[in-house]
Amino acid sequence: MFSSTYNCVFENKISILLNDLFIFVLMTKKYTIKDIAEMAGVSKGTVDRVLHNRGKVSDSAKEKITKILEEINFKPNPIAKNLKNNKIYRICILFPESHKDSYWVPCLDAITEFEENYQSLGVKTEQYRYNSSSPQSFKETALSLISTEPDAILMAPLFFNEAQAVSKLCHDKNIIISTFNNIIRKEGFSNYIGQDLFQSGRIAAKLLDTLLGQGHIAIIHVDEIVQNATHMQQKERGFKSYFEDKNSSSYKISTINLDKNLNFENEESLEAYFNNHEDINGVFVTTSKTYKIAEFKKTYQKNLKIVGYDLVDKNITLLKEGYIDFLINQNPKQQAFVGLSTLAEHLLFDKDIPKSILLPIDIINSENFQQYLE
Image (spheres, rainbow, N blue to C red):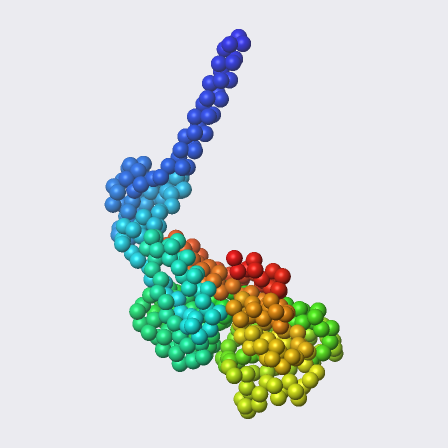
């Protein structure tokens, strides 16, 4: 009796294990079109037509194939399909010339890293560079790029009006377009990769508030056409909103627009301005050119607390020397890499493109900058 019962239990366990093994094999097996055709009792051509939604297929055959596909949880291999079709996807990246603005140098490393990861899968990248001081250069370079009809474009648009025109043209030509570093809220853009620019402005305000307690703060835009640069507008709005929400009369906020030589449109120098506004004790620089204000502070021994952006070499030097108090790291390398990868995975694997990918807002000082360089 004992032996019979034991054998029965043992046989039941074996049966369950075999059944589990069958399910496991079923779930992990790599199915081919031939396998599916045999399981559905149809030809390989019929399965191919159903998978690619082309040609005529009877309702009964389509129902059989669809049922089999659901049972085996079939997913086509996009890489194999891509290689079979010899398809090479072209992703073009449009961004400023790095020899004129070192902020963009890390993007070159991002492109190299991306190519190492995706080139063997059939994705090709091409660089298009424009003069960061010239809206015309941006427009001409973008039009040249679009004329080559790439599959997708990743763009760092510094000029809002021109970027809108580029967006519309890409939309009309069915070219996927995404932006990094600067958001352009316009129909036609697939997504934005970068920081919450408004929030980064608020963080800069909080840092200066902590450093000062009260006083006169200057928001300084250096060498940019502010009316056409939404990234600086967003930062300025975020900065001002912090103090508006605080509802304090402890601060006066002024905005200064300077050319690359630190002169005003009326050619008044920054030195003259600060001599006429000696109560200014804090500065928020909205771009990576923070070092220009820090060099001014160093030369004229001004008592200023400075918060700005980005780990360019000149900023790092002045941060170490104490002439810059805090930098907000926008991480252009990560922005470019994530942007390219998102487009590649959409083209290769049909992955959805999120409307935005927001990166962390890193606050850098003289004690922690080194870890962000490694």
